[in-house]
Image (cartoon, rainbow, N blue to C red):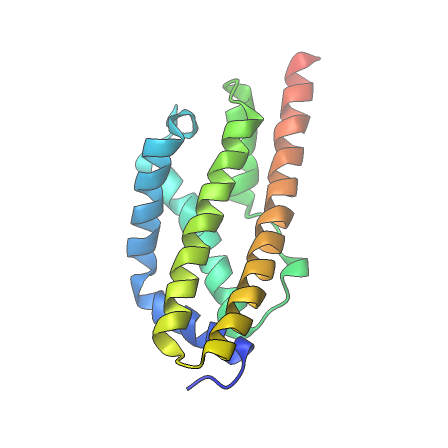
Length: 158
């Protein structure tokens, strides 16, 4: 049983690994329903691959206790942001997708924490830590994706 927040989060991530594909499928469906503009010109497999990259990175960070400050956007996310800009997609829709993804991974992580820990103080400490990490993880990736989107939009305007 986990004795501190890091160990608790690592345990939750290990518990999520076997369900990783299912988690991605849930995210794909959520994106399809809530941000349809992100689907235009994209097939399900490419969206699933992008989401899988993000989920895998998140679980790696939690499981290994890695620092999120070194996290970068997967190359596929940067390229997809450029294509989205080329199609005239709105940045607000792109960012909405990242917020949806964050909400999903935080929900599953916190559910895993609650399943694995019984001590309310440990659950609270893990919840605080995973929230801070999640927002920093999402913010770092979103900044890189937005930069690629903006560069492409600027290039198209010129």
